[in-house]
Image (cartoon, rainbow, N blue to C red; front, side, top):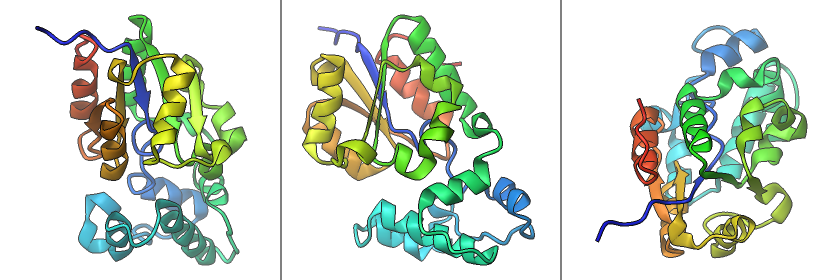
Length: 221
């Protein structure tokens, strides 16, 4: 028997809805007055260039620790002491936050919302990394029914309670929801909670959103 359509699309924010900071090095360098190609760490786009990213993928450091280290490094490059990720994001991306939203994300979110499906964000660091001012200026977030952010709950993916919290907010069963994230451990956590899952490939956003929307009987083109 054919599986029923999903009812809600649950998205991570950083990397899934927004472009990664790896993809916007040129914007960061221009904004901060750094020479082109100053920032050489490329995370998933060139793991060999980024041993610290590899350590994070192996679970040796947390994602928060990774980005705090990068924030401090970039701060030093401009002669400042940056002690949090929010400062990095504000300085690198603050002028027009909408420019860092993936066009594929905007299209997929619009398709799902216009078709009447529910939308949620489940993030470990939305306000911690981006700040409430940045978030308030992101027009695409108005399409979401709920945002569950570990900045405020203190419960990080892949803790099962993180997934349950968004299910409770949506008042839906796990199998009714499609969860999309770019970190394997977070996908594994969602799958263990019986959510439908899509591992987001930051190198091919269109394919990942196409896979997610198929659960809703929608075509991404």
